[in-house]
Each structure stands twice: as structure tokens, then as C-alpha cells.
Amino acid sequence: MLLHIREVLRPDELRRAQDILRTAPWQDGRLTAGEQSAQAKNNEQLREDCDATRALQQLLLRGLERHPIFFSAALPRQISPPLFNRYGGAANSFGNHVDSAVRFLQGGAGRVRTDISCTLFLAEPGDYDGGELVVEDTFGEQRVKLPAGDMVLYPGTSVHRVLPVTRGYRTASYFWIQSMARSDEQRRLLFDMDNHLRHLRSTYGETDAGVIGLTGTYHNLLRMWLDV
Ligand code: NI
Image (cartoon, rainbow, N blue to C red):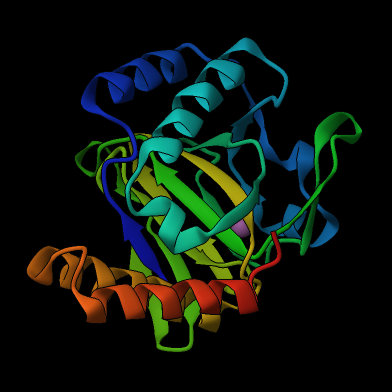
């Protein structure tokens, strides 16, 4: 599923992130691309081990942690450290590619299976032209360009690309999630069910017998399907 998650960053955090990005030490994105994606990739990114990256990672992870929808949608087991890229000028696009199935973390810090790919937009859509993330999924091509501070989750299995930026700069964070629910289909069902339950709870209250029963069923499905 393709899922839009709103306002991961608060306005003050977003401004701080944009300030950091403005003076950050950008470098050629091809330095870290695999063989296949090196041919498609033409952008800039931040080094994984610089102060700017570390400060931005903290902001983002805090935003994810407190977000009411994120956990239910992603059921994260592990999140790869968020990275940051920029499209604009001569380095302005990323052609069709698939993300590697396994992300090896720096310094031997382990591995993340890339069940879910995430892009968090950090530039306002009005500040650049082009730069849509295009994801090919079972419903065809989806084009995504979101307000700054918002994020899209999409299956790590999908072919995707970033269209050329023809004006301004598109800055974003990208990272991957290994989910406790490996299957996209199961994750979708669990997320839908949790949403319906939230609705029922607000309509009928926490102590309604049906609400209690269905909450039990939801948790029993989690027990059946999750690796924790
Ligand atoms: Ni990608």
C-alpha cells in the first residue's frame, strides 16, 4: 500500500531541519549507489556520519515516535537511520530502480530488510517544479509530491523513480523499515482493522462488548502474523 502520513515534523522542527539542510555539506549521490542504481541516480546526498545528518536524524526519529498513525501503519521492527538527499541544478533526477532488499548499516550495526520504503518531504512543493516520486504499484503509477513534513510509505518491492526537478531544490529524507509484518497485504489488513477499531471505540466507548471482542481479535492477528 501507498500511505500518506501527515505532519511527522511540527512547523518549528521543519524550520530547523530546513535551516540545517541549507548549509549542509552535500555530496554526489552516486558515491553510495549500487551498480544498477548508479546509472539511474543523479542527485546529491549528505554523508551518513556528519553533524547535519545526526541532528536531522534525531528530529525525524522523534517525530516518528510520537506520531499516532505511523506505528499502526508500519509496525516497525527496525528503522534504518534516515538519510537525506537533494535534487536540483544538474543533479536532479533518479530513474527507475528497485531498492536493495537488505540495507547494511554503517559500522557493522546490523541489517534491515527493506519491507517499506519511506520518503519524507522537506521542501515545500511550491519551492520546486517536478521532483514527483513515481511509484509503480498494483494500481498503476502513483505520483507523489507532498507538503514539507509529510511522508509517504510504499512497499520496498516497487519500482520507483524521481522525476527531474526543473526549478528550485527538492530536499527529502529517505529510509527503510523492516516491519514486524513482512507481508504488505497483512500489514494493510491490520492497519485497516486498527482504524476501524479506533472509530468504533470513539462511537461506542472502550467498554462496549463488541469493541473489546474485536480488539482481542486484532491482537490475536498480531500474535499470529508478527515477528517481534
Ligand atoms: Ni529508491
